[in-house]
Image 1 (cartoon, rainbow, N blue to C red):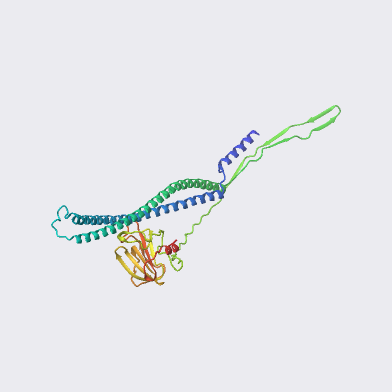
Image 2: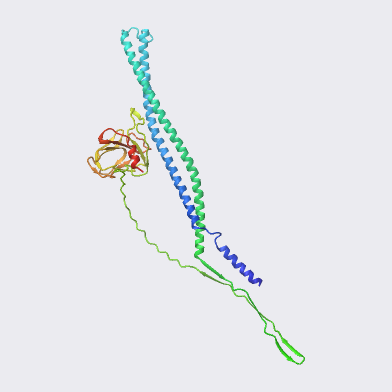
Length: 391
């Protein structure tokens, strides 16, 4: 009997060791996968936010540095005007500049008139200097705001990278346990232990009666049978057939929104900088759409290529004369589309070229400078238009 118990215990122990430690449900694995995917999505968004901040800082810094050059030149001019006015004042009120001009026959009226001109120029140049200071302060504040945005995005990225690493480890571990359980369940193990059987046969007592004689026969016969454990293992046959996948490549044209398509066909970002200060006394008359170099540029609407140029502030440019009467200006392009020519008809979404940094644009920060001229007139702020049609 003790041998039977030991055999049963050993079989149970083997079966327990072979089975997975705990069951993993489909729901648990699915929930963890969703959590991991959500964290990856947040990490991607934070990385894109940092990309926007870094790109914008670079572009604003470029404009700031150019404006500093203009401001420095204005300060030099301001100093020259002051020196000239000081010289004339000295002659007017003392008769000479350290007696150097004392012998010159310069009328007092002429000196007074010249000094008045100098004073007007000084006042005008002072306003120019004040405007430069205001513009530089504006750009510096924008840089500071995007530096803060970059730092905030970087902090989020650091936290999310840690979360993604931990979730990925948890998911990998749980998936391995799930796979082990699937493999275990695919292998069926049946262990049969014949129950211990103890049979005691006692034949009926036979009594023979004779006078004064009684005979009782009770031979005790005991038979014990212990069956041998039989183990049957069934391994399913798995047949794997690999069929070569069918690959279909489809080029999907841009989807028009309100009869227009986004001029930049690829990941990009932009903001409203209409009227922002620029070097040379200019203000920004378009929207800068930042994207990787080589990103496709397409016709915002059907029209005709009006003019192609390569040089000046715009670098490689295209003027598109839209069928609606609106003219569009694409600047800082890396290259024109092959075969593009003046007078050529272009369908909506048709290729015009690629994003670049030619002309007066920083090489490290490629972008499309995009302008919109209704009925061929003055430029208007294109931000509301591209904001409505660009994802």
